[in-house]
Length: 278
Image (cartoon, rainbow, N blue to C red):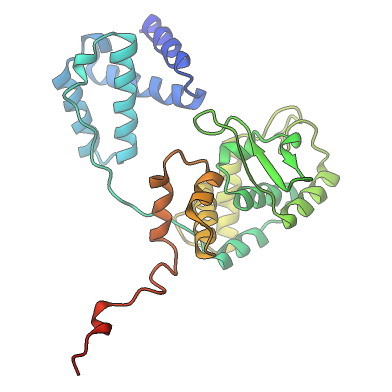
């Protein structure tokens, strides 16, 4: 398995997958192999289907099963050269589930709950720019373009760079933060000033302050990104602009926020109101 693992990682790297995705795919294949106690090259199509069915019956989410399928596709097509094993397997239908979002007041309450300047700066940045947790954690001081009021996101999801808006209020607070913490290369460093803060640390800080703020929603750091997009849509910002700010490849991914915008029915009349029936 060790040689196969090296080849698999090599092939994923050639396709320019991120380290996080490579890790997820390797773990997914390892679990498939352990489930049958055999090398993946010896596992047949029907067995792959049975394993996927097992995951679904065990209550695993659509996204989890989807990752396993993606990992198997790359393994059998690129590394093992056995593409026929995946040809008859179709991806599960994605259940439409709307993400959790905060109201503007809830975001305000959450940010007010912070007692640590650095921690507050991190989450103001995540919400203010609609960032992913990983994008905020590895951000560098040079990525703050105060002259143009932009934040440069380098090597985001899909290895894409993009620019997002830099709030005047956020810039003012980041300057206050910089005066107190003196970041050098990474804007938000960890215990070692030369290294970025970890995603796990940011998640722990989020959960702690979510409780402190009194918000009971089943939220994560990504909820701030969802809230950013929804609040922009409520303000009437064009969905194409929101797509660019979030770094979505497809407009379909951004369209889900239409279902969350509070005013989406604002100017829509029922056809019943146009009938002369009295």
